[in-house]
Length: 190
Image 1 (cartoon, rainbow, N blue to C red):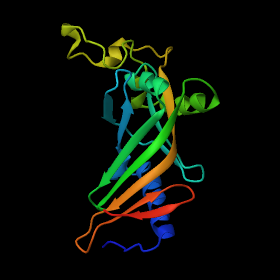
Image 2: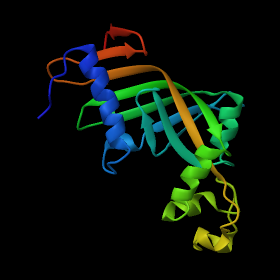
Image 3: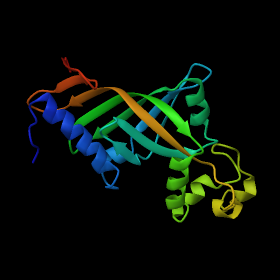
Image 4: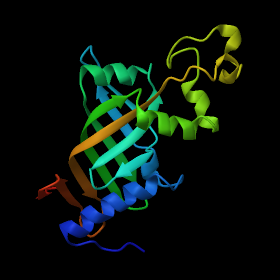
């Protein structure tokens, strides 16, 4: 049963609570948002990513990627991006306008890599070939672990600073929508 949240503070609190929950609950719909970035040729690229950490106090989100991924190049050219979250359970859509920074070295990357390199996820960052590169026809069915090396990680941490959120609640009693920043709340026509 849904709890009707009335005040902007209640809704804002619940948004961040759901985002935090998504980092721990593999079945939470917000665990896999869509990240859209601008391409150097002027087009837009969108992909599903996995939400890894949420810092409510700083209004930041983190995802992990291969440092050679096209999204890293896109972010280097234009750090503005949009996250889109949808939850049918909540009947909420959340769009976030963010700026992204990419870390490939340093204590944060080292600490996170130490944790991840012991997991099955490590092979995502150990491939000799960059994401999106063509496979040899005879290697199509071969596991990517055969072409990895534990000595060379391409692990990168993408930190998103939330600039603005567009929250939409769909309800039979009437939809609600708001534009939210760190300091403001504006009700919008759904």
